[in-house]
Length: 279
Image (cartoon, rainbow, N blue to C red; front, side):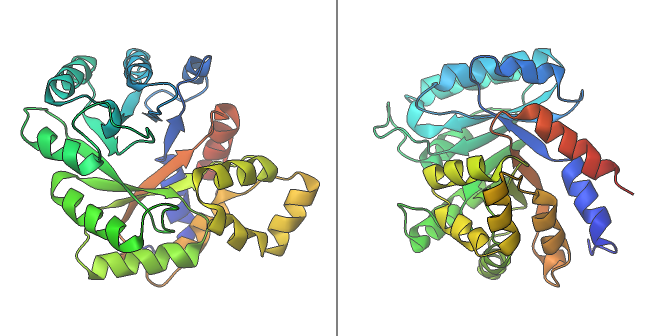
């Protein structure tokens, strides 16, 4: 759809954004902060384990939210555990999952990558409506770009959408999307965007998760440097506004936004409601 008004596009993207939650102790407090009917995505890390993700997902569904668990392939032992995992999700009314490789150094079982798990998933009666996979417009610190593209090609027939890493460089996003679209990647993109948090905290987290090059881009922006010195906050609506006004926007296939909240849920929801309601 060709946007007739960039502000309206931004409001729609923000209003429908999913909010990522890390299932740490006390993270269920998000249930009292997030509006009913919102979509919560639940991370899966080697530190907290897959069971923590599943339990939080079930709790989120009981609380009335749409819940999208991250399924880390390297934490699933094999086809039997995958089938049991799907049974639990079906009982909880979950019909959307986000499949990643995961950060575990050594796989627990048969799956070393998301593509391997997806291949088995395709052979099961899973009842899922949506299956997301990861993509990396700004590259990966440990995986060459050509390997990332080949992996995305393998995953595309087994998925319904893709979610990007946390991005800040509009030019890099547009350039990458234009390139992969031209090479046959048609999956709708949910753009990974950091929620509005302290710039200093954002810089620390971004370097840790491998998007330091994007932060170096941001550091060249005078407002970013000024905010960092003053302890200010990053404003994601500016990034979304620049994307919405890019001439290539109608052809990019951006289907939504995935908000990295870093569990600063109150600030994330306040910003989301304020931007979505702006005239």
